[in-house]
Amino acid sequence: MIIRKAKKEDIPFIIKGIFAIESTGKSNTFSNLFETDNETAYHYLEQFFLDEENFDTELSINTYTIAELDGQPAGMCALIHTNANYYQNKGELFPIHLKENHLDTFIKNAKTLPDIKTYSENKYFIEYIFTDDHFRNKGVANRLIQYQIENNNADKIYINVLENNTDALKYYLKLGFTKKETLIIDRPENQIFPDVKKILLSKNIKN
Image (cartoon, rainbow, N blue to C red; front, side, top):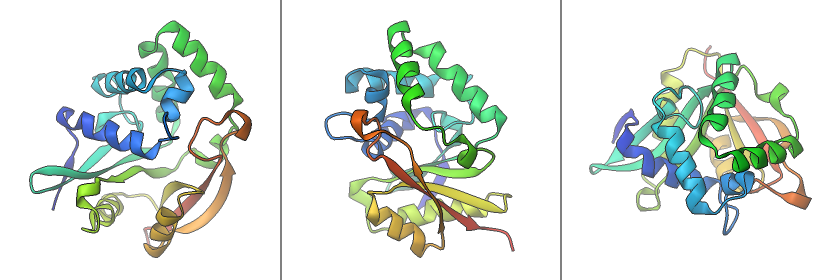
C-alpha cells in the first residue's frame, strides 16, 4: 500500500468520498446547504479543490492523503488544524466561488445550525476518512489514520463521527479513540447533515 499526498488527479475520488460520507439519501450536505442539485454541488466542490490559493481546510487539496492499492486510489482522509487561519480560509472560500443566490442561501442555512466552534477550534482533526468499496477489509482506513498520527506533532488528535454511524464509531474506539462530547449539529425540522448529532473522539498521541 502506498500512502501519498493528494494530487489534482485525485479530485474526483475525493469528491466521491465526501459525497458518500455526506449523503442524505437523494441529496447531500452541500446540496442541502446551497439548495442546489447534486451536480451543481459537485461543481462547486470541484472549484474549491482546483483553487490554487485555497489551503488548509477539508475543502483544500493540500490537506488530503491518499492510500493507493494496485495503482488505484483506495482510500483517503484529510488532516486539518482548526486554528484562526483555518476559519479565515474557509470563510473566504464560499464568497469567491458560490453564485450570489447560492451564497445567500448558504449563509441563511448556516445561521440556523448550532454553533459548535467552542468544541472544535484549535484542534487537529482527521476528517473524511473514506475507503472505496472495492478495497474494504484491506486495512486502508487504519493505515491512513496511523500515518496521520505518526506524522503529527500534536498531543492529541480528533475525529468527528456521526452518531448514527455506529460501525465507524466502534472502529475508532477499537483504534484507541475515546468519546469526548456528543454535539448537536443540526435541526431535525430542516435537516442539512446526515444526522443531527455527532460524537467528538480524541486520542492521546504523545506520551
